[in-house]
Image 1: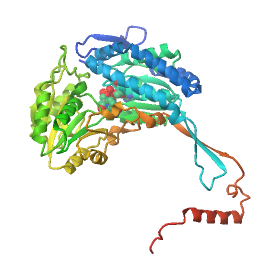
Image 2: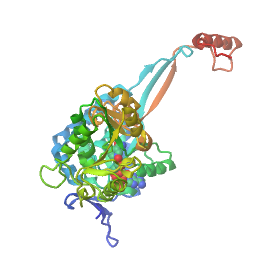
Image 3: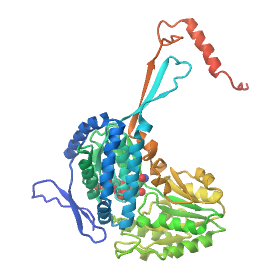
Image 4: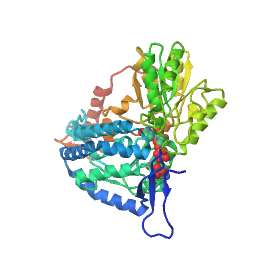
Length: 505
Ligand code: NDP
């Protein structure tokens, strides 16, 4: 069964449509247009006009309008969470948490855009002392946002909210699994602001590809590494810049002095919340040998209390994308075939829609469960002799999105040694909820940043201006330049930069 069904009838007239389905029940949640290349271009044209108006507003005026939108979303947050629950299957409480964090980010972006981006004076230096130098960050124009389904509000809003606050218009292509949520965001924005500064286009991968080719000024993509490569290739045709927020294989390290119970609690949440469908989810755990047994006891005890089903009080929702079930089953099977053991769950934990928590030990480091993104409520746990080995194994991956360290004494030191865009110390995924921190990865996890001051700047270009205040003492950039001026420059540069140790011959 595919969740998205193309309902194009060759005999019928009118636009093609597709259904979004409830992954728990299979019910149709909504029917949406498959927007064509022409539809996407028309949306970008409308966005361009709206961008001209939006970018001409002051930071304060934009903040006021974004605050109106924020208020509208907040007052209807239960409605939004319900739609998220229906389209992705995630528990209502998790949907509410996700929406609340997204709203908090929007508030930060709107409130800080002026401070981060507005024109400021910078030093012009001794040689150019007659100049006044300023830099400001101008909006790029129209941003195309392509989002995933796993956090269908929080993830795209990391681009949408920051791009809007920086003065851009946005055309958003949500995942085919969560189109209704994209439409909900655009509709509430239209009601609050009254102009098409945020629009949504729906459809399958082709609609996303059309957005890449549509002449937008930047694409902010969040999704898998494989699709990220395709997006980048398409964008290269028109030299459209891209941000790639891709997958991860995040590690959690437990040091010998860690609060073992707190580490197990955080590890379980990091591995299993949202049914493990989290880009910064914990997929690998490395534990100091002195606390390994205590940690594993605590983790397995807690994991056995979790339930994934459609009943009330269930902790985990279904796997949103049915084809992912085969990937999860394949990773568990590979781990077991190669000598690993499932101390909780196992291959039978993978059902038709739901996957029960699965904890794997003794799994070889070169197996699929350790190397590839599993995207299910599974995790590998390995014993290490010391934290040097833990860091080395954590870094032995092409991904580099997030990471976690549990240690009383060495948290910052270990965090600095892990090659990942973000690290949580004695907490899990906490960096994502702090709006002033940049979010993004390295390696196969992508590049570019959303959130924080870096996230605002990502949707701008720096505009540098040098204004002559008075005639220069040394006229250097003129064909009337004299030899005397050149000598004076040589003297000045020696005074400024000539000191330092002499290089031995
Ligand atoms: P996909 O890569 O399958 O899809 C992401 C988006 O790209 C969807 O909107 C999809 O549309 C669209 N798309 C597909 N093909 C193309 C194309 N050729 N050109 C342009 N757009 C296209 O990812 P998922 O939706 O399955 O999301 C899960 C992945 O996202 C995981 O790998 C996860 O780690 C990652 N992720 C990363 C985050 C981060 O911040 N680093 C955050 C959240 C998730 P359609 O759905 O219609 O096919």
